[in-house]
Image (tube, rainbow, N blue to C red; front, side, top):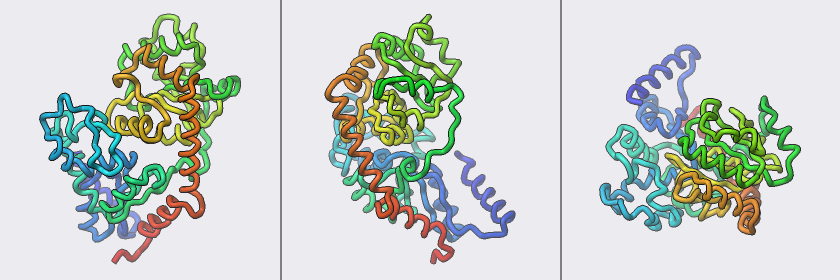
Length: 364
């Protein structure tokens, strides 16, 4: 990241040289906060894409206020205090926040980068994200006051036709043979894998619960599963699964996930309640939204995978009335999102604003 600004400058110069066209607008990932200065140097708008949800964005925008409120060294014992002084975050607890805001090493390079990002983003010509205003109305109102233009333009998954994705391990064919809303889908994304003891606990839980499952797990991690698990259990363990299609399948009844924003949105679109095992970044605040605001899932007990904790979560979602209520809540959330991406919806209107901003040749 230290050399990223200069690399971006060189890449832009090369693009201009090869295309013969000047840069008219700079669109960059929000983590590239230094794009602001490069946009100024080129005399063009800077448009920033926040790839996560609104709650984590607020966390970074309000970092200085939280540090003033809580301090930076006296958090121990206060982890369950809520952020009720920030609009739309009354349910979020200190422990849910990304590391580097008030928890962890605040002087690390990454923490300082995130802090600077939160300070600079309000200077962007616009900030856009893959969500819709209706999912987070209070925070939408607040963030509109923080940014020059705050544009929710999603959820993309509901606004675009599904791409053709291969299914090399036959997950969808296997799902076709299962009963509706009975299958557990397990995936922790492409970056993290739970520690071996948690993999064992998770395997023991799904086996003891006797639930059908699809588990997307790297081949190198299979060595940590209990002896004989693959032969005894009622499910599939595959190195990769077409997640969007799996979550959209009617046989899937619960998603055990790390809680990244894209996985959360795909689960919402599929109407599938979630069990969160957060690891880092936005996982914690996403989990809090899912459990306490939208009420469409739960966070694992004590934040780690245990056999009994997972079994209780599976029973809650698959067999109890609360699980039924979660699925009803999901239908309401999906309905709001579908309206947002409709012809006259808020996300559609915001996307048109974004296109006008990016494509306009006159930014004076």
